[in-house]
Image (cartoon, rainbow, N blue to C red; front, side):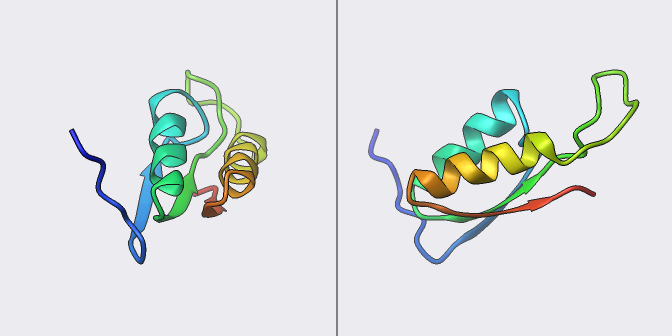
Amino acid sequence: MAQVELDGRVAVVTGAGGGLGRSHALSLAARGAKVVVNDLGGSRDGSGAGSEMADAVVAEGVAGGGEAVANYD
């Protein structure tokens, strides 16, 4: 299956700090989308918050040639 190029598109990926969300965010960025990496950064039980997870995905996406920004809401 051919991949669709996403130049000029914006994607908001929730839960993008880890797991499938991270994979989707990085894939979208690699294909040309501008990605909003949304992740509260809390633990699985919903407690806590932090920016480290989303920031790490943004850094990885940008290092791979994509455009990404973090959102912690």
